[in-house]
Image 1 (cartoon, rainbow, N blue to C red):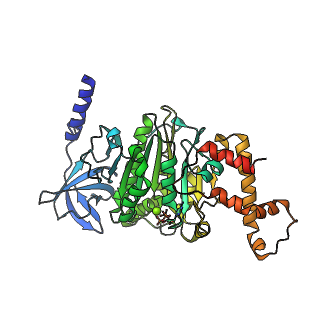
Image 2: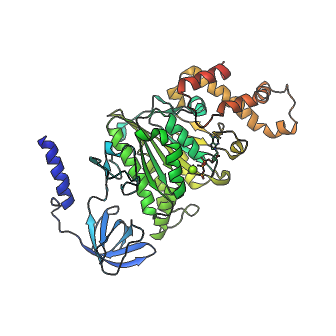
Image 3: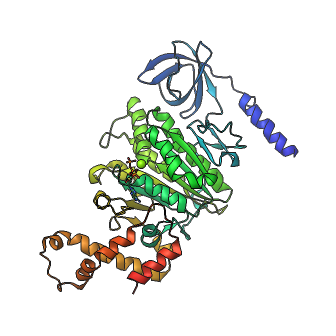
Length: 442
Ligand SMILES: Nc1ncnc2c1ncn2[C@@H]1O[C@H](COP(=O)(O)OP(=O)(O)OP(=O)(O)O)[C@@H](O)[C@H]1O
Ligand SMILES: [Mg+2]
C-alpha cells in the first residue's frame, strides 16, 4: 500500500521535476519557418518534449527534432498555436511518457492520448515510454506457435505465428481495411491495438463503426487523420506501439495494426526534408527509411513474460510498384508479407490475396507437416497457372503436355474459391487447415 502511494507521489514529483537538480532550461522562440521552430537557450536532447507558452496564456506542445549551432529546432505538435517571437519555451518531462492501462480498453484516443470518443476522461493508471524500452535482443522470443487470424486463405496458406510481424502490401482500394477488419474480428488476441495513421477523416469513423464494432471490448484505437502535422502521425504510431508493449509486458497476446506504415514514413520524410536531410532514395531521406525497422522491431514475442505483439502493417504500393523504397524496407524487416492484387479484386475475389507473391516466413515453424505439404501443393498449382497464364488464355497451351499445368487449369475455380471469403465470416485455423488438406493434401 505504502509502496503504491510512494509511486504515486513520485509520479507527481516527477511532473514537478524536483529530482532534476540541473537548472531549468527556459528558451526563447526566435524563428518560425516552414513549420520548424528555432529556440535559443534551450539545450535538450532530440526527441524530448517542450511547452511553448504563448502570450495569451495558451500552451503549445512541441518536440525537439534537431539543432543548428546554438539553436534548437522544434516542431509544434498543436497545429494552430498562436506563436510569436520571443515567447518562452520550457521542457516538458512528461511528453515522452504514454498513459497506459486497462482504462484504455474500449477507447479511441488521439496522438497525444486525449480521448476522441466523448466517453469522458481516461483513467489509465500507468505510464510507458513512448519510444519503448531498450531491451536485450535475447529477450526476444522465437515465433513457435500459430496465431489464428480468422481468414481461411491466411490461416491455411500463409499461417501466421504468435509474435510475427506482417506487412500487407497493396495499392489503394483493393481491400486492405476490410481485410484488417476481418482479422481484428477473427483473431484470437487478448487485446487489439489499432493505429489509424493518416487516413481520411471519414474513414476513421467508418472503421470504428463497421470493422471494430464487435471487437471494441478488447480494442484500443489511436487515430490521427491525414490533415494533422507529421510529428503527430509519428507519435500516434509510437503511442499505439507503446500501448501494445505495455500489455505484452503483462503477458497478453496483443494484435497491433498500423494503417498505414507508408503514411508514417511520409511523415518522417516531411520532417527530414524540413531539417535539410538529403532525399537519398526516390525522395525519401535516410531517416524515413530508418523509421521502419525502428517501429517494426518493437513488435514480437517477449521471452520473459510470454506476452507477444503480433503486428500487421499496411504498406501502399501503387500500380504494382514493387521497387518502392518503403515496400522494400518493410519487406526486408518483417517476417511475412501479404500482397493484395488489383486484378483479383477486379474479379471480385476477396480477400484479394495474391498467394504466389505472398509469404509467411514463420509458417514452416508453426504448422504440422501435413498442412505444410498441402500448402506447398496449392502453391505449385497457383504458380503453374500464373506462369502460363498468357499461353492458357490464348489457347496456346495444349492439355497433356504437363500434368501440373493440366491440374492447375482444371482446378482453377477451386483454387480461387479457396481464397474467397465473405467479409463477415470467420474461419478458424483448424477448419482452414483441414479444408486445405482435404482439397489439396496428398
Ligand atoms: N472481403 C470483401 N468482400 C467484398 N468486398 C470487399 C471485400 N474487401 C474489399 N471489398 C471492396 O473493396 C472496397 C475497398 O476496400 P478497402 O476500403 O478495404 O480498401 P483499402 O485498400 O483499405 O483502400 P484505401 O487504400 O482507400 O484505404 C470496399 O469498399 C469493398 O467494396
Ligand atoms: Mg483503407
